[in-house]
Image (cartoon, rainbow, N blue to C red; front, side, top):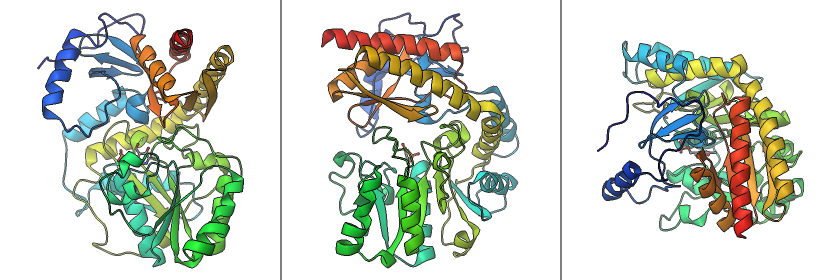
Length: 433
Ligand SMILES: Cc1ncc(COP(=O)(O)O)c(C=O)c1O
């Protein structure tokens, strides 16, 4: 195996591509990887990252990429943010693990931080796990336990994870369910996004399928992520809140991808001034350390007692140290930068759309959660590849969308460079027809 270089290759300009892509070391690594890894891992395109700094990723061949992925909307403070690294290093020298079955100070501090930044009026409490899927699993367990109701409503197009509960809620692609049934019972999928769709609850769900007073929760991504970076119509989330209030149903906001400052607000649901009962978070909240959490109103969270829910690793001190520093930086300017750079990128992408209206069907999103919709899956995949060849890492979402979700530290100059190269990639695909 090839060793990574000690330092990020220095270059005045990023991207800086020095080999064909994938390069020789990357190709060799792909052969090695193919021998040992589970083929279930969904590989996007052949980037072999070995080092990161801010919005730059260096691959195994010394190519420097401009990262519009942030490791799938994770490294919010940039790759290897120096203060996050220092917080992790400092904590690693003190205590790496002990388990939340005991009283790790950082665990409670992290829960207090999450409760402080939660958008609920009522005081909150939090539970810490290791990933988005665990956050969702815990949230739906709490919802069932607290309401003593069994059914849960999710949305067509939703992605909530891949463990049994969360994959049962997921309805973005049939392949996520294929071969795995039976899934969790008591789950219904509603149409997403349009205010007019909300009549489905009264006219279909509550009338034909299950009484409203047997529904524990509605779980929603305020902006659908894997489903294609879909922003709902104004009034949709407010309408969901009303359905919940009218029927004693809990509203769970899955903020795993859209939260942690990415849309310019800490939680994406705050863009509509809607208050959820439970929030699930992960990804960007700890800058790449594995941390997931759900935050709930205190009157809900205190309904269960010792042993009802727990985990060995959740709230690991290194992840908590990273997350506390991350939240500090999100509040200290990164959310504002997400809005400013998001506006810059959206404007630039709309110019690209104007030049290629047959190919680019839509540009949408909030802050640094932007989806560019193409006229076909083939064209979206071709643009993703052409961007990669130019040194810009962007990733498909849904079937026809390329998502732009860079680290929140992205500069004006980096956004401009990325736009120029993404525009060239689109032009190349348009020229090929
Ligand atoms: C909205 C949403 N929820 C949950 C998950 C699952 O998170 P994880 O992959 O950390 O389990 C994801 C992952 O992409 C997600 O986007």
